Image 1 (cartoon, one colour):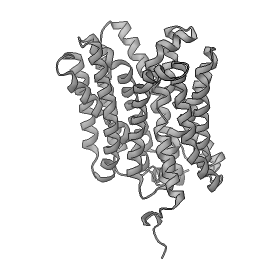
Image 2: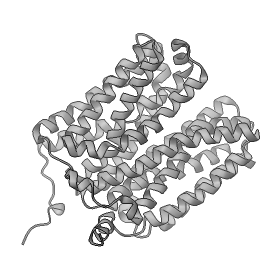
Image 3: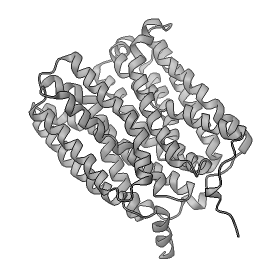
Image 4: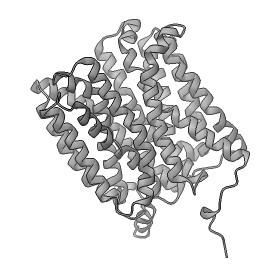
Length: 409
């Protein structure tokens, strides 16, 4: 009788701890390079002699690059191996983040930014697959660490940007470059793993040409769920402070409300993977998250200066849909290769919407002169998120749906 290796208690070897360290450090370095730009945007524009329009393009680049380069992450891992792909991702992030602040050419700055975000995109897509393969009996725990560390990194990037600019050589340039150094450090444990494992492939090229994930009901629903949630998250990061200020909340309090909203992502990341792993019927969780989203937007629309902290908390807690989507990527797949494919598929959709959502809200705001139409559109899209989430969270595996499709070919 063959033992079920997924139930064997892992041996805590030196390699195990190095792999765990790699997961922690990479997770914490997938967001600061993006979130550190916003607080320094005025200084960046002045230093490079650029307009706010160029600044808008820079602000949209995380979503654009995460979507574009994330789509190729799985094929890259198939070619070079999963561990090497993650290491190369951190190399690209380190080079781009370290070098971009020191150029005076705006095109070179954007190109190096794209290089950095391409590396982060590889980590976004492949780290859940690495967790699935390397720690099969600890997936909920490490997905919780992954989701919460993403939030920690995002929070620290924005929180430390201005203080670092006060003390770092070069001011804002040195502040941005710090995150290139931390990304380089994060890549070291993964390089040690890659050298030890060699080019261990993530499936085969023939495997990547299997049935399209569009043929999987769970995959399509999860892609939409992840995508609409990402659109809301990036819209909230970019516009919530202005929503509150236009509703009569002063600038300082509006900034604190956004910090509260963002900080709840840490709690969400810790809790939601355990919820996905232990709750049998996730439909009520999805509905609750949708209701929190709607309540937050209605509060901002009709009572923005009354109990404004309550609306920020409501939106922040609704952001638990993000770690829920990440956890469903591993919970609704068996094979790490399918996990990686589903991760890339979902995140490509997600970050495409993340890049376009804030822009469309700005267009609606400019066209209507107020927040009524933009907020009601966001409320309606919350219904789409819930509908997709109900399907994505239902029992079943993407692997089985793809296998059934393959048999019918």
